[in-house]
Image (cartoon, rainbow, N blue to C red; front, top):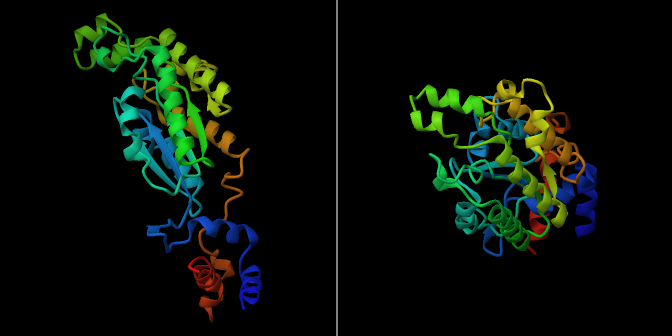
Amino acid sequence: MLTEGFNLIQNEASISRLYCLKVKINLQRNGEEQTMRPEIVLFGDSLTEQSFSAGGWGAALADTYSRKADVLVRGYDGYNTRWALILLPHVFSSKQGPVVVTVFFGANDATILGGRLGRLHVPVEEYKDNLKTIVNHLKECYPTSLVVLITPPPVDEEGRKEYARSFDDEEAMEFPERTNEVTGLYATKCLELANEMGLHAIDLWSKLQETEGWQKKFLSDGVHLTPEGNAIVHQELQKVLNETSVSAAKLPLDFPHHSKIDGKCPEKAFQYLSLLSSHYLI
């Protein structure tokens, strides 16, 4: 009977869909509910928190993976890697791991000690160690998850001053809270760690600066991303994911495409669901 059932599955659904359903079918197993789709988690600071705003890179990623994976935003405005460590057991508590996790910190770690935002500062070596702790935690909890590190973007120092002027912030105008040179040191440490741990990484600090006029084209206030800057993040992340088994092109749809559903007998296209449910509940 089981053999006949799987023959039916092969007729009604592709092998790739069958493979994917092993991890995403919605059923209770060992007391834990399984999600219907794989998950992609975006973990970071405000550059991640804002990624679902208009033109955001997270929203673009969700569109790319529509009906294939759920994109979850775990971005925290103002957070550095030191504070991110406190969040780890709370953000990543599910036993069913995401297929991809992006780790996008550093913009706040790189603030100048003693400046207006000095309380956010984390020394560059500690920043690297904290990133390593985050990655090790993810790998321990989810050995098969793909972890992608993203460096902080460059800083438009004049843009930050203009932003401060708009708020009549005299201190910020006189003493820079961030510099592009210092932020570059943090980007370098992020890339070093990726190389040492064999991880994928996106060098956003360098990538944005390849374009003339990057300061205003890609940054809205000297630090945060414009829609064009967000598009670069999405583009670079897609390049990384397209080289892996979790590229959008390789993942199947969660349920059959409408062209595969018989209008007179629609249930037929979904028979594989009940068969798989019975199999995995055994």
